[in-house]
Length: 91
Image (cartoon, rainbow, N blue to C red):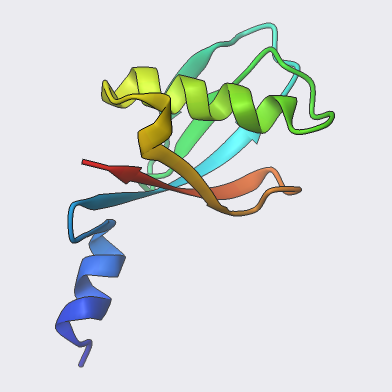
């Protein structure tokens, strides 16, 4: 049986923080765009290239706009060099 902390982490929310799983599509002509996938993860299309953290910065800006929070409330917590990323968003 999962503990209370584990259940909150699975649901994506813990202590005023929303955890977001996302796949990034850098250099996309389709972006900036956020799509919600069947498993609840997000697909982020950004125009910025995956060079020197530009796509990560664009993804943070896109998530901030999508959730209506300041950019400072969005943190990349895993996947800095991967297309598969995890963000935390302060509520």
